[in-house]
Length: 329
Image (cartoon, rainbow, N blue to C red; front, top):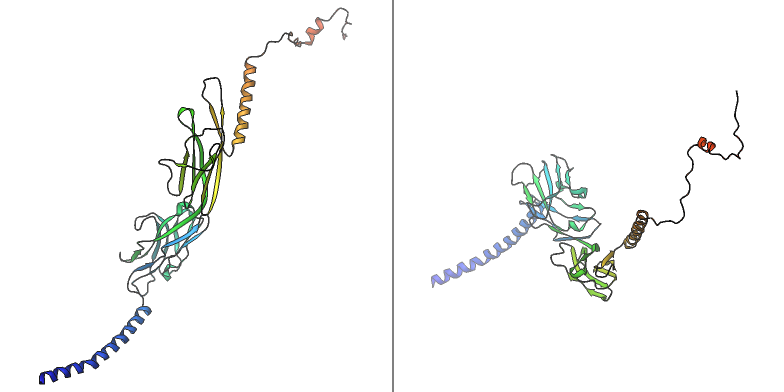
């Protein structure tokens, strides 16, 4: 009985202590959180967005901010941006700031299109990319280096994805010889999202789907083949995506020579009419050259040659002509 009373007294005595401890723990927790937010973070970290999207020809900003374990740092520092791969990718931008200076002097800017917008002294490495091209599409990684200890440097591991969008553009259109004196056409276009290609032409109708060329197309480019051009006329390749469409045409004409000779096809693109006119001029010159090499025989006698000397003309004068005047001293 005494043991039970003693145990009950212990339990009752613990209740106020538990309540007091809980209150103290809550208060301490609030104080700790305030200190964490008000004091500088005692570790390296970088904050970048997952993706930035911009159109080709425009500019894009790649945000990047960081924290470091120093309460205050005003020594030399270097800011670096890489493309493609963290730690090993090629550098596209690099600048360095001297001790106590907020000016980061640019040492590298690929093609002069990369410019630092942020202030590394204020933990900001944001970068601006001018005149975007489809080749700029990819992942970029920011890095900061403090002079001194090898551990005083940090680089984002996942980076920020730069997505460059573009309306379709046809970069190549060609006609190539195929088997049995036939011809085939190739169309290559680029864009982001990658465009869909369609062919239309004689006996094809509108919206005829193209056949992807084996081993063709990479990155933002797509190539499609029209396997057989069976009829003369105009063949049009159309490229389209969510941002627009583009088209280009090629003209096919067959010139048949002697019986049994293979047909000659003349593909005409954007400069097709000029090429056709040039072919006519060359043919006319060739015909004129043949006429000069094989002149036509004439029945009329040739024109008499003019005399080379006046004295010879005087000696051949007719007796009826009056004598020439003479000067006697």
